[in-house]
Image (cartoon, rainbow, N blue to C red; front, side, top):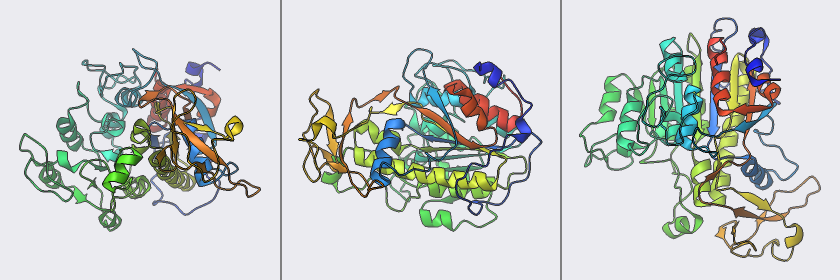
Length: 448
């Protein structure tokens, strides 16, 4: 079926809930008020940089080759095509802009097309998040990275420069979103001002924490403070780390500096998402939640296999949370995709390399073609070992990296809940179709 024809039919909107969860669970949040017929809530989850190959490595390590992740259990799937206006491989800021606006842009774009402003595919002068707020819906942004990360920030910020971290952070705080949970405290405070996680870095003298407090936000800084939010909190801002909530360096550097993959005391992406849903579920006109696990991208881009897999485990826990929420609130669409593949990760074997990939033995530092080989503690260390298969056998393997940057890779769109059947019916979805599906579900109208 032609993609435009698929997204052009509105007849089945009200009856499209699919009941996605494989295991019944208690609601993750109170039952939301039922929006207008044919529309619903949207949860868009972006495990950045995580392709089919990354999910495969995670499955082997965490569950074994016969196990199934929460991601595996999402019932609807399509192949994702993520090219930019000027290139074949997606970028984090260009990809997020396309998801947020439904308009294909240059790779170096952050909420606009290069240096030029854009309208969304709907004709609205702003992103889908800004249109949702203009129509009375609540919006939440959740990111394991800093507030300036484009996977969430590009939904509310337009700027010609991705590296304007202080300016992006300021614009995010002025966006009016109901809930924002992420890291990045250094860009909230002036240089010389000590915060909960470290010293500020702003050169303009602005104290964004004070501005948020004046705007009525409750501010939390730790996992414990997030969990202790009062039940009636409706405007919440979380600042959980000096920069990201993870330490995105290679295994050898982390070992030398005695640093963990994730910052102790910071909530996980699942913790943050659960808190956000508790608030957003009370929205009278429905909500949009955009959540991103950024560690899945950043660890891949430094070829840290152990960090990438840990980030994936965290992302999968968030998907489990979203699946349970959709099961309890079937007027919600949950969809997930990446915009590119971080590092070109591949699993080897051992196959024909039985002599070099053996349980308990160190891997060679490189494959025969020169690709770096990661074991459990980095390049050239002990081979990975899968969790047991259905026969109780654990299999050794290596992880090979093709690059330190992003590649097009094998990316899927997956989903559950209201209108998610359209993903499977499409079979293949462009990055602009992510916007189309979210828009259709939020507003009951087909665009483009």
